[in-house]
Image (cartoon, rainbow, N blue to C red; front, side):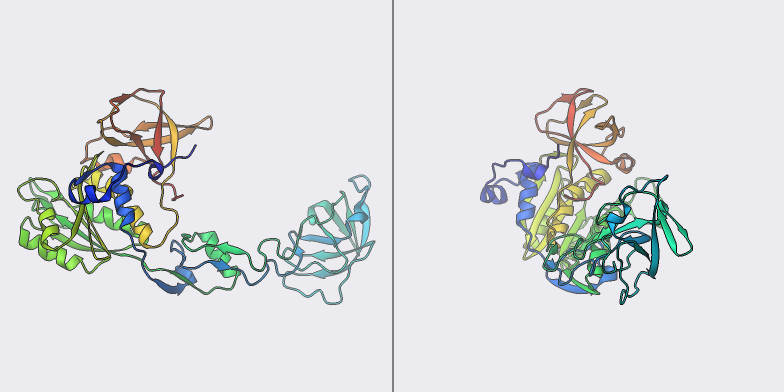
Length: 427
């Protein structure tokens, strides 16, 4: 049975959370963020660029598809009653009186009792025919065809408007376009489509300990993987990322980089959101008049997490370790990006799964990296091993997050747990 974290009942008082208590629950954090979103404006784009974008308008068909009755098979257009009693040992023989190719004309072509017209897939059904028998059930000899099985009326027969009728609403505002949706738009003769604009996203890494791709490794320093992981995630959800670089652990350097970042719709920083001597992100929020909504979430991994607003801009301060950076993005930034693009479906599906090992919980909303499989039509899940926040490989191996609610101390193998399918499309 599908469930979702967004559907849980909340005891939520915005004024208290936003101004007096900057530590919030997991559900409260999600709700605050979603309530802060104002969708972006629209633009017209080529249908070739439409995959993954979010529709800005309902799509109502002005035509029928198919436009006329047509054949679903290569075969013979016939009168179905002519095949009554036909079998392998007792075939019915009909005279072939013509052929219609896909895209061909039916002008002057007519089927009557005792006759058949050779027809190709997609070709219009000629007058008088009410069924199509496929080639595989026939044998052609000279100008006649033997039919070896009875055929019902409208077999292999596609009626005009069977797929789409004039006036049908085929796609809705807020739909994220998939490949089949693009095909439908093309069938309706759309060469451009109106979609929500893509959010621009500035990405900042903070910390003197970081060094970038191409720099020589030094003792005590860490490769800056977060920026590139986040750029990949932003692109995955059709945002436009811009990596601004590594901000040094000085108030001046961080503030300058944040000022540059605020040109974007969304700002994401990593690190500097805890209580260390050089954690300046929250001070920068204050200096730049960013309205801090919360600075800590009751979740593991990813408890230090700052979220603020400045006008219509969303500012996310993510933790510095790679795993909480990525899990925080999935839970909080991802739905915000989809919301900015007007998407109706922003929830990852959650299913129940049987746990295959014992897990100790953290007595907070605990997201454990897991890998699910399906056995005998039931979900089973195990962890991906060590759960340290620095171990990005454990996230690379994961296809889900095991959700352990607050105040839970442990879960035993064989018990059912909620599992969020992080690689699944939104529902």
